[in-house]
Image (cartoon, rainbow, N blue to C red; front, side, top):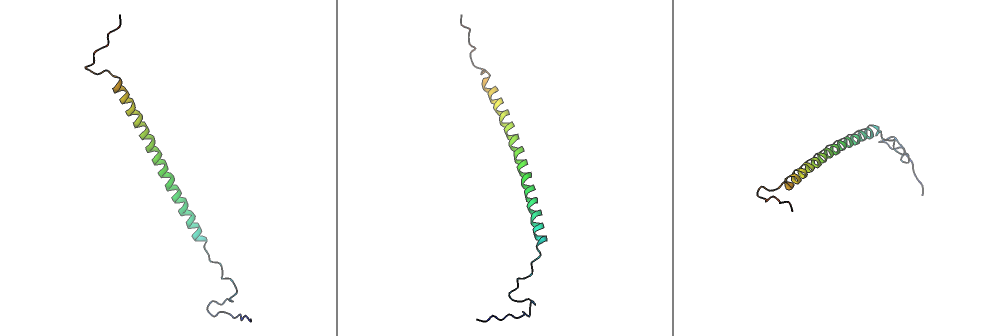
Length: 85
């Protein structure tokens, strides 16, 4: 089998030569910038959610203290306990 190598008229390259490398430096730089931006947005959301959870925990503690205080007070129509002689 005989292989004929001739110059391609369109590209000016031999068919067996690899194509020239494509310049993708700016694309990888942009992907890195987008990744860092998304990571920053995610960190901001995590911080906001953690603050909301802390505030919710404080409100639950306050409600629990109010209920304990309300349930420990004697009712208005309760008969006071007499001391044992």
